[in-house]
Length: 316
Ligand SMILES: [Fe+2]
Ligand SMILES: [Fe+2]
Image (cartoon, rainbow, N blue to C red; front, side, top):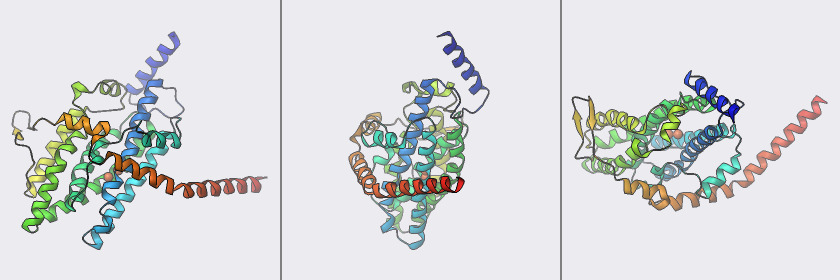
């Protein structure tokens, strides 16, 4: 008991001195579980997030926009891949992680349970959802778990491309015909509040946050990140002549920041609990794709085995 305590103390000092925790280092079990939960949630979000956007690949309005969207959706698959691999360094297998997602034991970002109903949604998702993701992920480049922090550096570079491509779609629509501008405004109306909810509950209702901050897993609170996102995004909407759907939104000269309205927390918790518009469909699609891809995994395993046997043979 005494020894355990002193190890935890040393661990605390270690992370406070801005050192990175590596897979083979000693860490409190609760830290390991917290990082597994957070990283796997993140990995699942990347992969499930491919669905609402893949929905528009075949209907993109030009070859150029189709290429860009394809590249973006592929990037998200890559993000999932790094993050699953990095999560495995904590001693959990890919199979277990996928199983937790498919059985509903693990969560992913609720934003991906909303449908993408028009082309403008590709703009709003890139601009707002990837924008909110960056806000969160820039801080994670300094998270205390080494493999997570390093994965985030590359992911953030790609996310900023995603945010730009979304904003470009919105910019074009907003400068287009009356109907196109209305379509962009409608997408902003539907995605604004769910994007703010991506930062999670407010600090008073976020019991795990304090411990995560102490361990330097999280570097900024949910409310701070949300405020930064609002302050950055409002001028972007104004620049292209769109209106943020919040009657309480107002510049606060004293705080040098925007005041904004209250989120609908009932909706937030309903979607988290599985009652969003697309929760069931997202998981059904994931299971189907996973089953249809079984032969690829088998082939890759057989190939890896053959390579290993060859290596052994040439070494002997
Ligand atoms: Fe991503
Ligand atoms: Fe992205």
